[in-house]
Image (cartoon, each protein chain N blue to C red):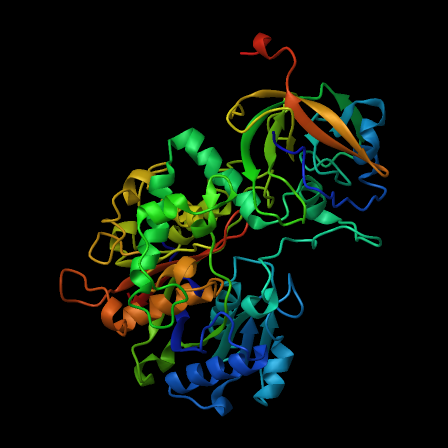
Length: 143
Length: 408
């Protein structure tokens, strides 16, 4: 059984630009900035849309569904007390170019695959809701 | 395609090379080993410190984890009482070799004539008796710092070391290209074979594929022998205007072209192609600046901070097709010293020691000068290599250059 992440979570420093992202899981939804002009999702948060330079950016909830691009099982105890855990690189369903580094949870190393559909589940730490990903519950409906 | 005017970097040569003792650990200070390497390079170039009018280093003052940065350029300038017309130090740019490239451009622009360039690491001393450190420390307790910038997107998930970020590259390549651990291991085994003939190398005892496959995992699919060996050491060069080449005591190594592009997003997780990242762009931009082709390269010193990165570079530089580096290295023949592309002939960073890019540049010069001794590569049986490719960096960090014996 793999751990859900390191024994101790190093956390982001919250500022005006990233607060919406790290607090987003309070209502169970994952959010990204989206451009009101060209409709691109923007990540990490930026002052203007990096595609069209519009200032019409605002957080928008997404489905929370994503696809595994790559994964690794970290074994080395960089953080004392940690058991092996899965680090994943996932691409969100709404826009393939938006990726998150995350922990893959509720899945074993021999079960995880590139292309596996996953869904967000949040882990609350202090004022931060970390988006982790588990196998999608209706995975059989996915291609 | 070459521009009508030759690229400006072609006005530069590496006229001198120097290296300190290399150890794990050395029990000497950063500035001590840096001065040793710098004075060796200046003497090797047939110069004295009074001739040096430029100074450059990577990554500059206080950057990174302990033991990573080495002394700053002001410390080295003062230790050698250099009188400088140009000086530079920094950690952003085309890999670690950005300091060498900056020196080439300074020489080409007439800002300096002889630039001393150095890179010093003391990561073995900094590591002490404990293990290699992740970024952000071990955590726990009160007053733990929080992280902004790009680290906020990886550290919370325990992706606290470059090995984690690069393991994702390796795993993706297994999925897309069918890369195997047996193929990956050939990079480590090749380095170890070459290190046996490098008296300065950190790990020289023989290693076979079973040893590699049995090594403990660090971050799957990368094991201990996929990670380079932290060490203490300093490497220095003198970059001079090519007008000086006829007067160098040893053959000058001419800078034929440099590759500095970064066209994808500068990000470990958002770069468009996670199997190549910035190596693709740096390599493409280098070939745009020269009439030389991959088939002209006689010896390659490709960045192997992690084994997989050397494979990424083999493809990016066009020594084999995209996704074909696994079969290319598979039996170790092609990358061996008698192969079509001798690779990392001093052992690379995996066995030679993590001199962080500069050790690879040093070895490219050694080979072009015919000073490799037991590990010297001979092309067509008898001749010293004429063209060497060198690369530095991994992920969104990449720089590359072609060096030639003679004007190329």
